[in-house]
Length: 75
Image (cartoon, rainbow, N blue to C red; front, side, top):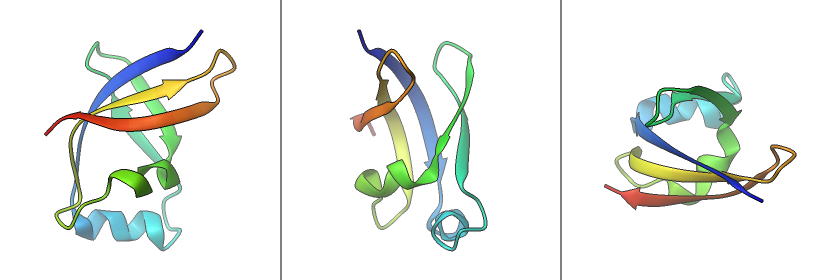
């Protein structure tokens, strides 16, 4: 059974540099149902655009909280 969480992210290209340079290794975000989650910043690589990371994303984790996937569900 997978756990699916939706988060709204608005990360500018400038802020993304902190993640890529290793100054920050985790993202803290609020799910659309109000929970605060923390996940490794490197999972954002597949959803980065020129203007950063913006939109609503679905994060999928397995029953052991291991990351499975991230996908954009709404811009």
